[in-house]
Length: 369
Image 1: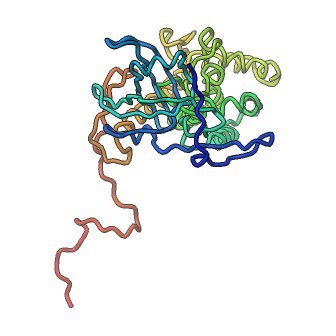
Image 2: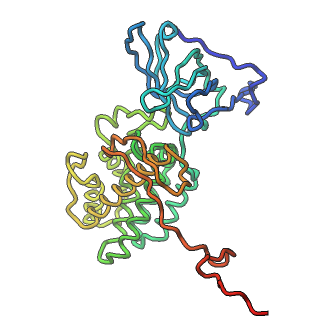
Image 3: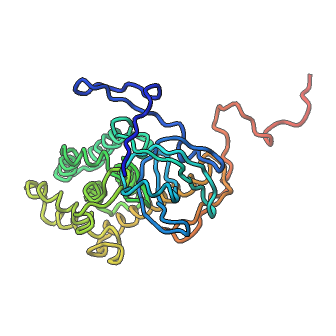
């Protein structure tokens, strides 16, 4: 049974007018990262997962709730659970709940819940996003390729594909994965730009590599993820994503541009496709082919390195302030099959001109008058 909640007018703020109607926003007070055991929470969240289960006292709902700072588990116990016949991803809800510890995690026990219309919320409060605006990431990627791909036909190909309106709009919203790495709005562009930069630096160390074809492949290797994964709160897979996967979808998106690129050598096109379809490295990891050129190996390792480091960043920042010096463990990471540790960092010398004087540099003898 759905009950749509109308938020009291004194809690709403005008946002804009559409068709003569005032569109209003309700701004959150509690974010997932702020929820501690014992806290009484009354606020808005987005449902990303919902499943019914059975306890001794009757059926209950297992929910995953999300805002831009992360996810938290929640439960609706009987008899309240019987009020809700259909719960699912992408539903905005206002809850009243108590934060309690279950196992080793904080969980919300929901005491009341009502549905909220999308017109009354600011979606940016519910969807995690890159710290750099996606539009800026897209411009940075185009500028990087323009500056660093010297072969004009490859440079033009990459620019035309990434700047095409439908592709650009999809990239701005796309995560790089459903949950493991860069799983937030702008994550795909952030990951792509990082992989390009890693490949660029590797080419400095190994000058025999074909920098132009490698950077082009790095820029386009995950293009299909813009169609594989939904940009919404649930980041669910599309039908074509489940049936074909992002590698084949990416090649399909590139094909019309390749067909019009008459100035591209067929051998370069063949190599470009091979680098892209082999970037997962092994058949069991989803690559139609394993890497068979140096550039294909480099992209595979660069892609894997950036994904792993982002996974570690997310895991470690979820348990403590990322600005801390170190000395704490993450929760168990299923994708990595281990706990990970933020180690104490080696002290760095104070920047020149900072005014700080190291103790060992101070003169301990009294000055003569």
